[in-house]
Length: 316
Image (cartoon, rainbow, N blue to C red; front, side):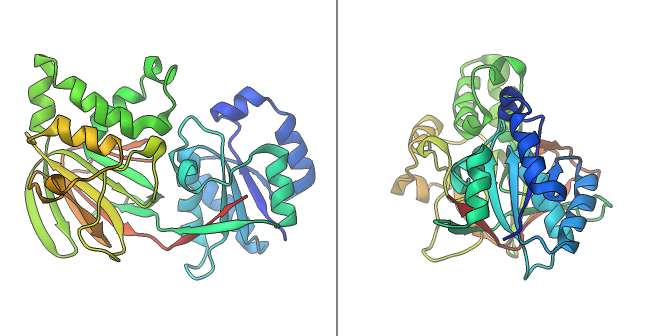
């Protein structure tokens, strides 16, 4: 079966491994070997893949590359005919690959995709981030957040941190750094105060200040971390967590969430709200981070998080 490979030569592992793989893959795949580029250029390249009838796309890069490619695919392919996706974990940020990664990289991945034997799959629904009342084009991603998460990711993106910690640990780093920041008087008030956050979830509105807001279309994070829980069983939609400003029992809650646990006291506590939703409207002055990319708030301060069309991810 014909497939395409979108290769990010700038990603950490691809830079480290040199050009041998990209040259061999380009020789085998010819026009179906595509270099990663900006969102607008990627849309044009994906248009060509769609016109050639490509039904499987391998993404060789990190979370940012996956977001760029999924955004382009959603713009071009019909929602009922999306290609299968194989994520080859090659970036500094591989949070997505930790959940829905193909499992192998390099020429072994090419061989497995050519043969299409022993391939499993799973379905995930990305986040569609848009800005109502603006001309910004929507983007797709699988993990995002604002308020304290935005502040912590900015720290995680600093060169000194990236030298020692891959960003697929960013969620754990975010929760841990939030606690650490409270130890210093200079940052304690700013972090605890959070950001103004007006949220409308599936038609229900609430507002206040948020210490941290997270949302994901994934089903698993690194190292057993899982800061979400479902209020009711069998409910579908994007998972979200909103921690209110000046949250009580923050260290206790963080300890539980770093271990992927949500005890009964946490589920019932009014400072910690988690569940699932198809449509989330937010009004905030915070930057929003989606798959590691920073998006400044528009003048209206309004953004929307919706369930995008479901994608099938392949696993070797």
